[in-house]
Each structure stands twice: as C-alpha cells, then as structure tokens.
Length: 124
Image 1 (cartoon, one colour):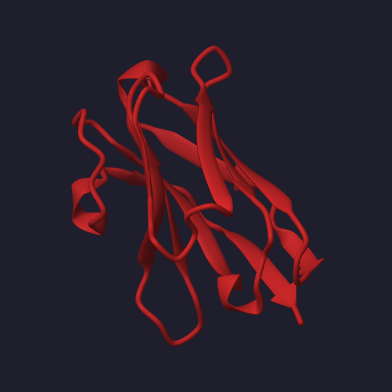
Image 2 (cartoon, rainbow, N blue to C red):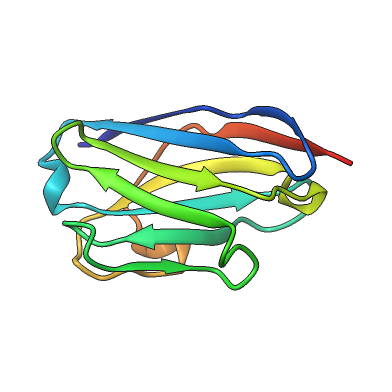
C-alpha cells in the first residue's frame, strides 16, 4: 500500500508560479512511476506529467510543455510539479498518482495509488 499526500496548491494570478509536492510512504519510492493528473470542473481527469523510477525519463502533456516540470527526490520520497506561466485554464484539482510498472502511462487505470488532490486556481 502507498499513501500519497499532495501540497502546494493555492490561488495565483495568471503568469504566476506554483510548486506542487507529493510525499509518498508505504513502498519503495524509487520503484514507483509517478504522475500528475488534473481535473477541472465538469471535465474528465487528464494526464499532466509523469516521471520514471529514477527520474531519467519524463513526459508532459502538450498543454503544459515548456511551462510545467516534473521532478523527483527519491531520498525524500517526494515528487514535484513546478508550474510556471500559469493560465486560467490550468485551474483544476491536481492529483498525484503512483504506478508499480516502470513505464510512464497517460491513462488513469495504469496507476495504482492516488492522493486526495490539491486545488490550483489561476485568476485572470
């Protein structure tokens, strides 16, 4: 079992930055593929970014490429999402997810564990 706790959400103006954190416990963190997803009101949850076991490989959705960066610190059992140049359309609940296979998937069903989510609101 893996527990995931997100933090770092909040209200920010368009063009601003936030860094989300997700602390993991309960399983060897370095053997988890980590991902960030988001869900805006009235929309399906969507993939934002993913990172491989040791951070050698990352993948981001086209909508956030060049603005968001995913990283991880295996010594701290934490994955981060640095979000720059935020736009109102980035407003959503952001979820951290962990998968036990060494592949970065974009589909929710490939992730085994989920956090409770953290709200990000970008004002125009």
